[in-house]
Image 1 (cartoon, rainbow, N blue to C red):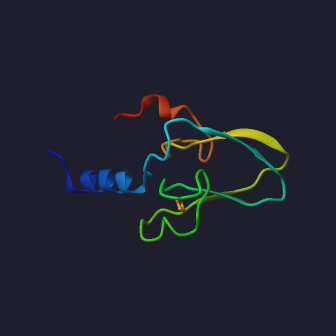
Image 2 (cartoon, protein in one colour):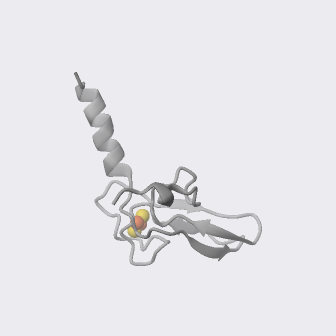
Length: 96
Ligand code: FES
C-alpha cells in the first residue's frame, strides 16, 4: 500500500520540476563577472534565463550562478537536468 508520505514526496517532486521549455539544450557563451539566473520553472519569456516574474507563485526559484572564466556551455531547456543549469542529456529521455 502506498503511504501518504510517499504521495506527498511525488507531489513535491512534480511541483518542483519545471515545465519543458525546449527539447534541446541551448549553447551560450558565459563570461566571468556576470551573474546569470537560469530559469528553472520553464515559464520564462527569456529562455534559458529567468525573466524575474514567470516563476512567481510556482514555488520554484531560478538557479543563480557565475563562471570563473569565459566558456561555451550547453544550458538545459527541458528543465529536467540533474546538473543544473547544464545539460545532462535528460532531454533524450523525455516522455511526450
Ligand atoms: S521565470 Fe522561470 S525561474 Fe524565473
